[in-house]
Image 1 (cartoon, one colour):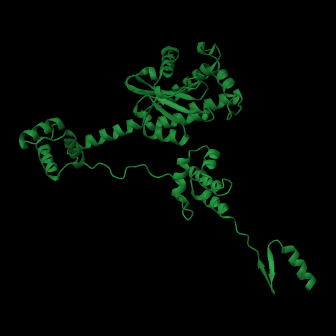
Image 2 (cartoon, one colour; image 1 turned 90 degrees about the horizontal axis):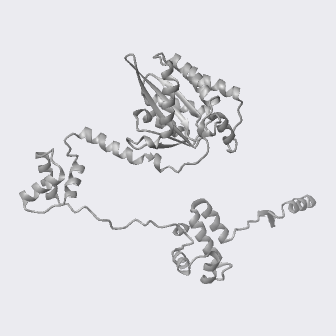
Image 3 (cartoon, helix red, strand yellow; image 1 turned 45 degrees about the vertical axis):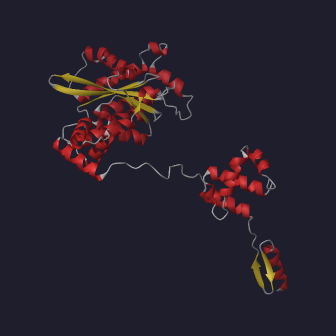
Length: 372
């Protein structure tokens, strides 16, 4: 019995100790600094963790010498003392950055009397602008007033002649502010970086047809498909097909401000994770590559007798032409290579490149744009 107990004790020696008849687990407490690091790793930002290391070094290797600690971490003594004085070991969040927002912000200095007068004048002259109401206010009440107070009151109480129209205008302005412009994009010279899109509108025998076009601005590999309506759902469908054929090796898209590139198209682009850039209004030079491709379709395909209002038949003919354009037709801008050979040669250096045979691509091209 004693032998077996000794054997058990020898096996558990690093973890337990015998106290009388009992085996008591030995608990080794972590140092204060290890506990701090464990808490910081879970709860603090990287900057706060770095500041914690300043404090630990100061109390251990730095021998409580602020100058030595500052030199070791490449900071000024003033910065070190700032965070040392803020530090509370019971609350490590004291090492986090503090909000820089002002505690006391300027309040709008408009009195209730001024508001009441402005509301009255605005309702009586609903079509007048803020400068006219300002002049009228000063003539009637013999007091000066700033135009921003009038503007603030109009916005606060929504005193607009056409509230619904104003609501749409404000929403449009807000949306336009979020748009990234094509001319601001720093271009990169590799296939798939920027896919330019546009729409060709065709009137044929009293009917209207829309051809959505896309072209890789570097390799010039191109896509096009006819639709019966100019709907964002069709543009979303089109970009999904283009992305599929390029194995989703796309980074950004650019296009004009057409309604087809809104709503469902935007949803598709977000799901695919592409950057999205907009041309400036009435600025075709923001999308010159796709504009030139549109002209090529018109001159080399439509004008040669291939136009029909039968969407299925037109897309079959267009796909045959596109296969020749991408795989057979030499391009002067590519030093007389075909778009696909240039794309294949350049894209192979990319880390996400996946090899595909030309036969498989032909099949995918036909299925995606003719029968998909």
